[in-house]
View 1 (spheres, helix red, strand yellow):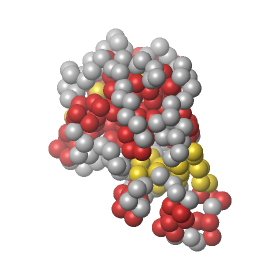
View 2: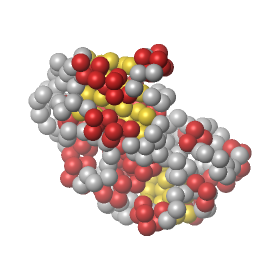
View 3: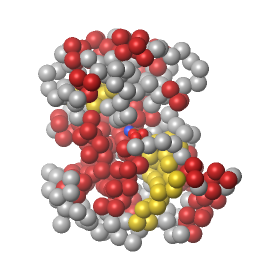
Length: 318
Ligand code: CP
């Protein structure tokens, strides 16, 4: 891998390789092994132009566990706030011999733009761009599903909520279809589903939560992404929870061993109630832990100096 910007166009073999390598990093992510030297001497710069808790911190931890040096640029206190252009910021960081930019930006395409203007030796990972793509989130979700379900064949995955504004949903849908699940369902109010979603995304659309979660193996909830809504119809939080919020009672319509996922941040009492968020079927915090292993795998595939490979069953690396 040179860059990791989107899941679009990646084949099943590559996605599976990322998942297999992530298994090999679980021991490091869980601190059974403290560090590996795969990125020793490399410099990773986190450029987050949008807020983040999980993604920024797990990228930082992942880079440190790979023995890289990490720069966290605080955009609000950087020279960007004095009018420096994005490209000038990049050139200055490249002058410090940065090897990788991890980029989050409100504009769709920002990570591609940076990748196309970065120096030839620099890798770029997209940590979320507008509504477009959040590929490491998509892969950590696939990793979590595979660990619980053993694979993807025959699975029905229901994605509930604001798909229209969700880069996470786009990455998940691409990955799920590439990895060969039986069916991807989207469950949302009409106003929060992209036009022609069935053909364009390869999903089955439902506007009724009970119908949509019936016999599902995996239920993924999404937050209402108000920061990306531009004046269209927006249900009140109360109304949304009444129609689309996941409760224990509604969860009973899914398979008995169904898992409940959410990329975070959760809005309790809006997309789900706390009993579900903290209940036995919830794997939400496991998704966060898995994010560390998956981000180590992707970073090492882009800028790792050795290829240690990875065992298929999560054994720690040497
Ligand atoms: N899932 C996710 O992207 O969370 P953050 O916004 O906290 O990074």
